[in-house]
Amino acid sequence: MNIHVERYGQGEKIIFIHGSGWNTRMWYNQRDYLKSSMEVILVDLPGHGKSPGDGCDSVEEYKEAVYGVIRRLNTGRCYVAGHSLGGAITMSLALSYPDAIKGVVLIGTGAKLRVLPQILEGITKDKENTVQNIVTLAFSKKASSTLKSDYFDETIKCRAEVIYKDFNACDHFNIMDFVSSLQVPALIICGTDDSLTPPRYSYYLNKEIKGSRLVLIEDAGHMVMMEKLEGVNRAIEEFVRGQLDTHG
Image 1 (cartoon, one colour):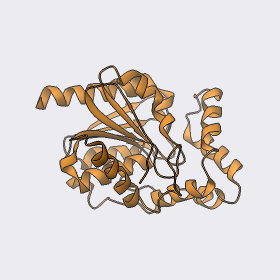
Image 2: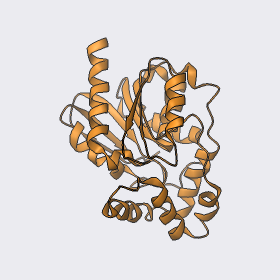
Image 3: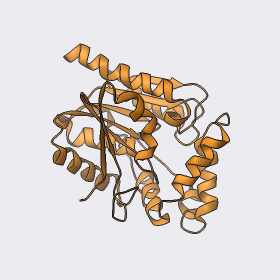
């Protein structure tokens, strides 16, 4: 599968997987900070950004597409970070291919991801208004209007059919019976104002994943890595550095 990949920097490899309806631009704040200390690999999922295709019907299909990237790039064992849908893909990767994963960063995600009916039903019927509603829900009330506008402008570029597939894949995702068997080091990040995947989702992951670390970011919503990039960047950097100090 011809998936668009961007690579920056050198060192420990970390792959970033974006959320529903988005693309590699979701992670540019992380790229700019982390590329000085590790190799940052950004992936456009099928049908998103610069990757051709019509999206995937399930988290499992997206997982296999990303695993294909890992094999194609011959990364060896690497870190994987994912947001929301990307977090679901990340956990699925770690459960299916633990030998390929050094650690995971789970941002604004959960072991089960239910989607509001008005989003699922609205995205193909009234894309513009539905995306605007998503923007309202995705950010803390304290987020700037410029940030929200930029998010809207980028999301609206993604085809409605692909966004629908993303949210439908999330809605059918449920690993609550299996997440406790995840054996790789895990960092869990959530904004305290996240209304789409509330902090209780992250508390559950932290409880179920042995040895995981939970970082709550104040005054941030679902798009925590855009709203409070400094806190997210430092948490990821410290997590990877801590694993290196522990395991060499």
